[in-house]
Amino acid sequence: MLRIISANLNGIRSAVNKGFLNWIQKQNADFICLQELKAQETDMTPEMLAPSGYQGYFHYAEKKGYSGVGIYTKHKPDQVIIGLGHADIDAEGRYIELQFNQVYKKPLSIVSLYLPSGSSGEDRQQVKFSVMERFYPHLEALKASGREVVVCGDWNIAHKEADLKNWKGNKKNSGFLPEERAWMTEIFENLGWVDAYRKVHPETTDECYTWWSNRGAAWEKNVGWRIDYQVTTPEIGNSANACEIYKAERFSDHAPLTVHYQVDLI
Image 1 (tube, helix red, strand yellow):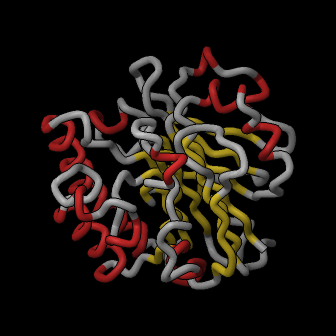
Image 2 (cartoon, rainbow, N blue to C red):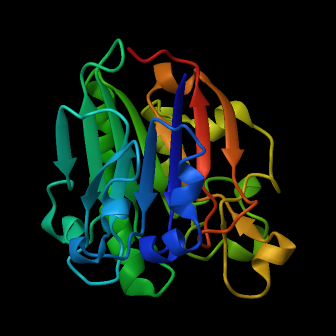
Image 3 (spheres, helix red, strand yellow):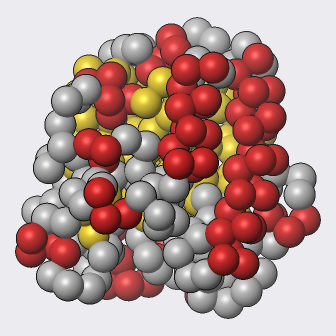
């Protein structure tokens, strides 16, 4: 059994203060992918860098208190890839990949991804489109690499109408634009990636959300969006047999997404 968690923390220091590290100790996950660290290496405590039983690997943004991704792993990686090789994207700390050659019957990559939000204005929406355009061939290459891959993270896109409460009112808003949704469809239908949550729960709506705005009592009214995903290569994705979106405690404005994969690690 392989168990992977994806969690946008909206600030690792804040999430830790709210009990996130205590929670992960009870989860028995192999990998925990983190987004929006909002921290530099100098801000990280030893416990944040390597919680009991785990080693952490991180890609920090150059700008303080902004973005950043990481992965906690129980297994020692053979290679750590930090960034996508595009200077402007990598300055914002949006991609880290751990490669393992000995933990599964095939080479395995675990990725933590934080795609940009375009909601603050048109300039950031254009940045988002630019990142999407350059990330697509990277996904194509990953898919063709022969590795099994799990891309965890905050994609900042709700793919279908079932993936957000107020879809009618958001058709012209970042995160649910036709171009963004079509791009996700291309990833699943043309490139053949698997949306692990939808493999397990193809029909859910109200239960599927992973993010709630801090405005307008969105959490209390469950006016949410599903923008956190585990996007996988087919073999591992089609083995997904259980998913959980943890809402009993709130570590950030996102809820952690856990997926169980019915595969055996070596």
